[in-house]
Amino acid sequence: MPSVFARLAQQASGLALDIGANTGVFELLAAAANPQLRVCAFEPLESVRELLYENLARNPDLAPRIAVEPFALSRADGSFMGGQKHSARERLSWSRSMSRGMKTRS
Image (cartoon, rainbow, N blue to C red):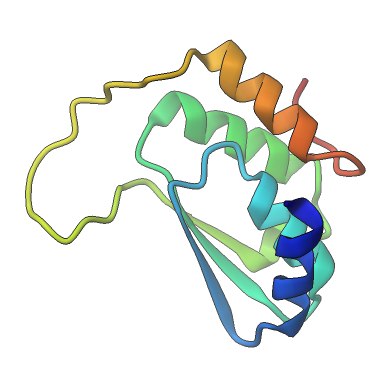
């Protein structure tokens, strides 16, 4: 999946949006694959967003092209109670497996 995403990012122009950005792996991959691309990442969960910021700090050459927005996007108004189906450890494990070659938090 990362190689497919990287190929798509290489072909993109302008701005890529990541709705539910998690720890930022796909933002970093997109920015690394296409130096002309700007990325806007939406991540409502503060604890996850903190990991995203840490991963951006580990990649200072890519970070300036990645904007992080601290909210969710939906077609309906409402509130999000933060019900997570996966533990932080499970999300980090998945993120590590997707981020080979990038500097991300372990």
